[in-house]
Each structure stands twice: as C-alpha cells, then as structure tokens.
Length: 82
Image 1 (cartoon, rainbow, N blue to C red):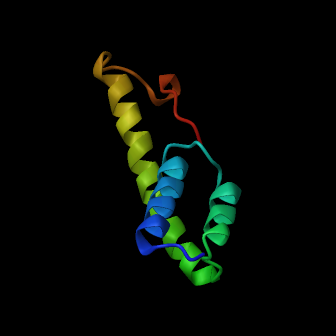
Image 2 (tube, rainbow, N blue to C red; image 1 turned 90 degrees about the vertical axis):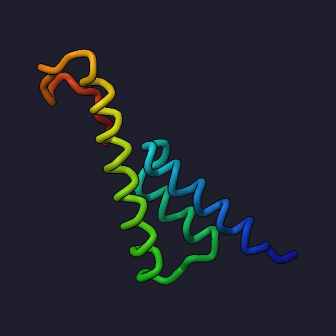
Image 3 (spheres, rainbow, N blue to C red; image 1 turned 180 degrees about the vertical axis):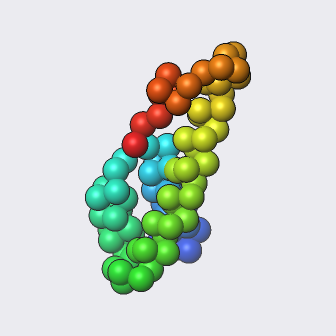
C-alpha cells in the first residue's frame, strides 16, 4: 500500500521537529530519512541542513526564554543541549 504525499510530508515534518527539539540525534534523524525512502546522500544532506537551522533556532529561542528573567545570565548558566 502506497503512502500519500501528505503522509510523507507529515512524517518528514515530525522527524525534523524531533531533531530540532533535540529529541533525536543525528544518526536517528538520518535513519529516519532512510526509513522514509530518502536514500540519496545529497537529499539527506539537504534535509539535514534545514533541520540544523531549525535546531539552532530552537536552541536560541530556549536560551532567550531562560535569559528573560535575568538580563545578566551567562552562557554557562544556560541549559543548552547539543
């Protein structure tokens, strides 16, 4: 039974969101792309670059939220996960 385009896009978006929110690591993300049928190294790199940008924005947003209450917070005090 074939997947619809919307199902594929929904699964890809969830995979990217999980990666951006640090719920999965790079290897799990790459494997998830393969499981979705994205086997080309170039295509996976393209998807990873998008997800890396989302992950950066997620981390920056979290850091900004943590710093709201304390304008003098240092980066050492921020809880930023890799």
